[in-house]
Length: 195
Image (cartoon, rainbow, N blue to C red; front, side):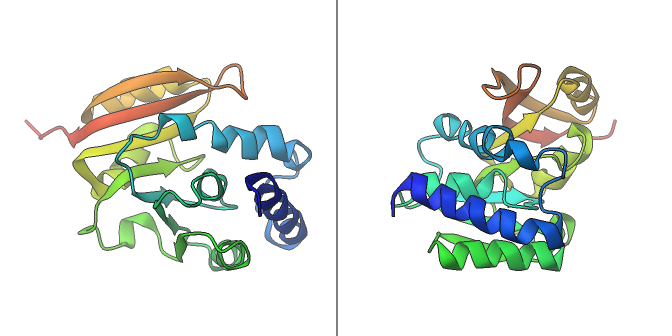
């Protein structure tokens, strides 16, 4: 199957399950391709060359991880999706199985998962404000791990609040799908020590 046909199969599964699962809000379901699928795929050119292990925190309906896994087919990347809602996790497992994606799904909250395993790349979309989100994802980061986070128009305030708790390097990439949105690329994340 081609990438486009895989994406279309994923979209069809999502639409089929969405009535019962509320995987995507009713307000945005009619914008599934630009608002969710294309929005997820814009992370692909930002992935570091050595990124092989990827964890997506709070995967929900599979954004951005499932479109990224489809686009990564054959390149050796492995995706771990963390989704505490058992019904959403069942949907994600169904997609991974039906499309034969290199994806494992864990029905667990990020803060409850064993944090001894680190990942090359961490993603999360619409999970929490940046200070809380960095607290969640830090446990999965080695010093060289990369973090890619789509964020909305309030990203500057979130960055300022996060900078009080964490040291990090950040690159701000303009979103191609939302004029006021950005993708935050965070590297060298480390919690500030309490003085």
